[in-house]
Length: 144
Image 1 (tube, rainbow, N blue to C red):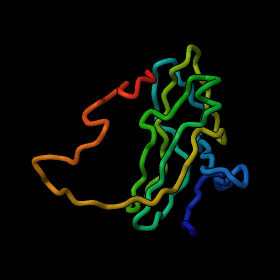
Image 2: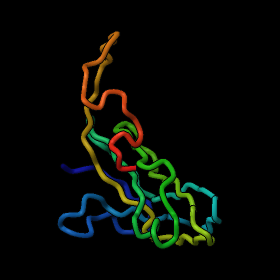
Image 3: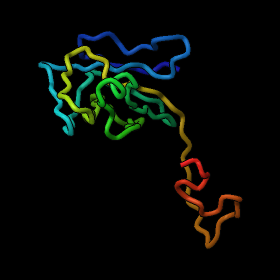
Image 4: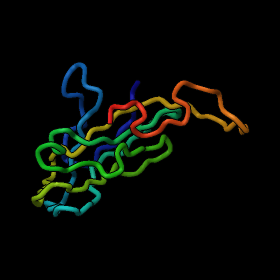
């Protein structure tokens, strides 16, 4: 699949880091550095616009290194970019760490994955099929 992209940033286009990488790293496109204090959130521009084919979405996900080293993650994870959106990909980051976190233009801030999805219609019913789990919710499996 080929996806049309407009890159208004000085950064290279996102790319797969390895042959088996699922996502591409997105980089910050900033006029000046941003410092995110603990508990603070902000939207970080990437300077990237894409045209996703109908039936697909882009998901914006955290980078594990930022999460474990600094406590910085994508707030609405995964963030969804719909096929009809044509604006700048902005990433909502939050600092859950203990120290302020500095973002510079070109820093890798998130990863993007393209997924196919299915549209569906509701089939309203009075009952659902029975399963072994039934209505067992959080912790039902006994693991937590």
